[in-house]
Image (cartoon, rainbow, N blue to C red; front, side, top):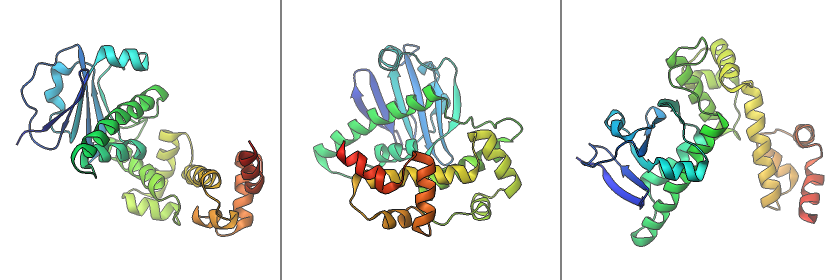
Length: 249
């Protein structure tokens, strides 16, 4: 089996699926990105001459260094592997799976490849990626489970989430999760849940005409009073006022 080759542009080529890379000559003028879904991680090589090292990735991008430097200002100087955040994994899944047919499928995949490259470099630039080889005094396995906990929060933030439930779901004890999460993400588990819930509430206030009480409930708050207090602390105004001002603007 050989990976499917998809040419995004003269400066970017994607290879999708299992199997080996087809023969090709991509040397140091190109960089390589490899995306895996199990475990969820992204690998980076500043020199595509060594792309065989990530041959088992589900998606491989080969992109010219010149293009990345022109678009993003620079490229990471060192090779590495990082846990794949939910927002990046979602785009990668869209590249891999495709949900349309014919020319529309090609157009969508083309767009999603470009989006995946952009969101990956955004993560690089903001230093938000967590190395797969551990962090501080965490082992690589512990870091992977804590990264799983962050993805669980990112994807199920509107459900009832407790520290015990998250630790059980991710196969890590509560104390290590609490300590490691703060070490890796510079916030507590509770802060991460609140951040996602309030961000989701803000989006619903701006994009829908749902009642404020319904938005709070959809975002995991048990009553309108607790939602209003939390939203007001985060954004400096109550949800109703926030919506009114944004609509008026």
